[in-house]
Image (cartoon, rainbow over all chains, first blue to last red; front, side):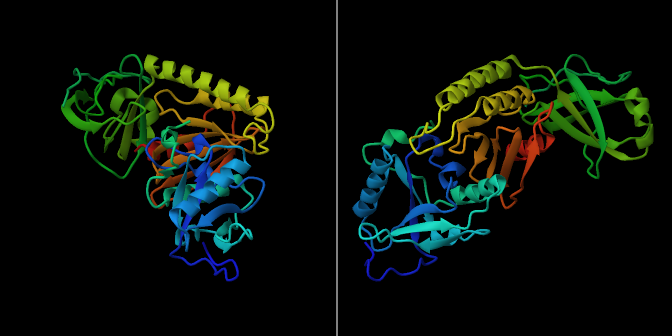
Length: 144
Length: 226
């Protein structure tokens, strides 16, 4: 994980994970729906930086996130930070110390729902590859 | 390629061409061919159609889109099709669109199934916190508007995927690929917030549901599956 005493700004080349806990945010073809990147109540969206993190550390954060929400972790979608710099959006390092220095936020969502949908659709289209099922939840790749 | 039975539009009056065929003409700069035949739900997407217009016999290779519609263009040299409404267009190049308006039993059956799914989603999300994350309830008003929207969906338009959203809105999605989709969220006051992604185009906006399915959405759905 990132050194919590020296959290660097998010670099364009960094890969960010968005954890999936709702079945209706993914499609059967391995893509994700815009709803995965749609903010609600807050104008920022949580993501987790892969930087300096082992795969099991990133998954561990995902399982914690799901547990906090009383949900099952279905998987994660990875997106390049540079793909998040679209329209009014940007990415800001937002460490949750001491446990998760890799936490970041996608910020700058507009208030209008159609604008949010448009940005969310672009982010969903920009994920790096098919979303990754969490171990033990590989049946999650079914549209719910 | 399959060929449909030959058909003539000679003597047509207004809506014409047999059950379910509607003829539309509009100006277009493009030119292609001049013959057309009856459209059936069993017709393959790409097909060869025989027929004649104003006595000119021929055939056209055409592509039927998702709404059982074929389009072609020709020079309108006379009151073709004997429609007096066309007089102002004589001498112009026009685009002719023939749309099958016959309801498809298969489509109506699929719509009924989706209406039931919508009812189930509305029921399941009718209380706040339905997602365990303080989601707002899907109100009966939102549910009723979404139902109306689905009922108004033109026959043979691809059916959307429906999902509830944490802000209590119901979302309809028409999806072909990550960069060919239309997503529309329905609010309790009847406003539809929509956004499309068609390759590099990213139109979005809002409209109010009235007694017709929004033509803007029909247009973008057409491009999603075009």
